[in-house]
Amino acid sequence: MSFAENLVTVQGRIIAACERARRDPAEVMLVAVSKNHPAESVAAAVALGVTLFGENRVQEAKAKIPASPAKARWHFIGHLQSNKARDAVALFEMIESVDSLALAAELQKQAEKQAKSLKILVEVNVAGESSKFGWNPDRLLAELAALNAHPRLELHGLMTVAPYATDPEKVRPVFRKLRELRDRCADLLGAPLPVLSMGMSGDLEVAIEEGATIVRVGTALFGPRPRPVRDDAAE
Ligand SMILES: *Cc1c(COP(=O)(O)O)cnc(C)c1O
Image 1 (tube, rainbow, N blue to C red):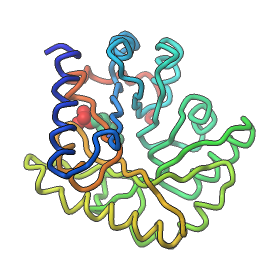
Image 2: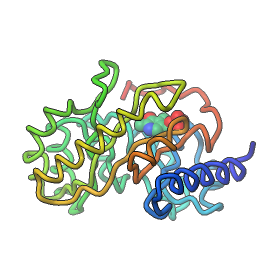
Image 3: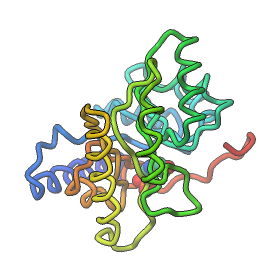
């Protein structure tokens, strides 16, 4: 399948899920996850109207972003080490995966130095998987005020990576919990947190039915990922 065909399929899945949930498809943004795919693939996607891309490694993005069309906008979706915060702030319009107060403080510092504001989401480890990064929900509620106190960081909402499941219905409770946690966080802050980034190639319908406003789709668009090139220290 070509990227163009895959894009039509994914857009059709998004629209069908929105219809089932009685939601406006304009509320759901597609982040095309281009990790492990080259700048040429990004250019082909941009030519078909895709403008938002997701990357999970700074090192890879640092080479790919300057080689990609200027129209492309970039979200960081992986675990970010503090020593890569400077590059991440320079390269990305949103960091979806802020997973600690220490990282938030470092992003604030780098955004201040670069005189820009940075959109962020907080990553939540809803299912408490030891293999995943992200906030424990109770801890997030306790630390939310501190997280929101950084003047250069604009907190837009929450993000999660659901556990792998062959039946996407199995992860519906994870998405629902993220939405409920978002509602509690918004109440606590007294401000709306409109963005819910959840749902990937295998489970985007269920995520949209539960309120996703960003779906992050890699495989269903670009096909299977080539093996990552491990040419730098683990990120
Ligand atoms: C790789 C990745 C995706 C895309 O996953 P697919 O199953 O290929 O759609 C989405 N979100 C994050 C955080 C990822 O690392």
